[in-house]
Image 1 (spheres, rainbow, N blue to C red):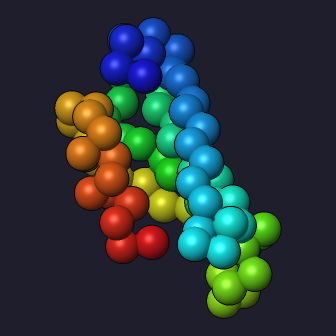
Image 2: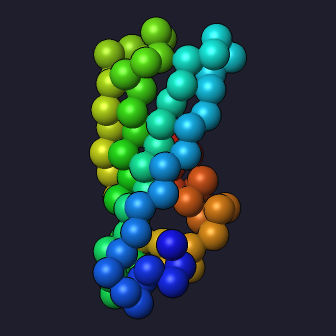
Length: 76
């Protein structure tokens, strides 16, 4: 993803599982030459999502690291 910032962009998909075994998919998307990361959370398979099947937000992430992406999505 870091190299994609000077190119055309990239997308990363990560799946985590709840304690009940339900998958939550997170998609991180970058555009070329932009510090913004779009994040999409797919909670549609989580029985306890509280009706929030999809959540979309974006953050300014000047340096792409796992910690920076985690911090960006921590409140969702």
